[in-house]
Image (cartoon, rainbow, N blue to C red):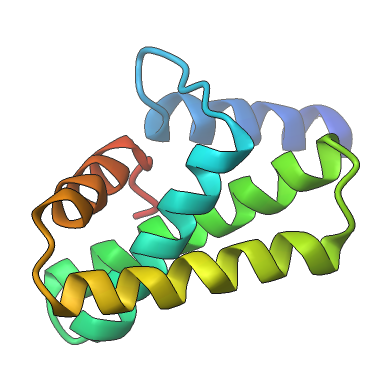
Length: 118
């Protein structure tokens, strides 16, 4: 019988192997903030009733948690990280509502680079 820590580590490794891209994704704090903001905005505008809406929600969750971790790792105060994501979301809602092609491309890129959480 496996010990609990070993069983947990095995389960996490299995989940990570199944859900992460073959090439590790390395992003800056600024890029993570942008992806968190645009995916949050996309999720807010789409809703979660459709398959795309659920995918946007998952991507927003992934990018938000990633941004929080990068903020912590870089020593940023949590309130600053939250403020950065909120500002990015507000700008992204405006830009997506105006159908800005650059932000739409950014949204698609951020969705594609987030692992599936299913």
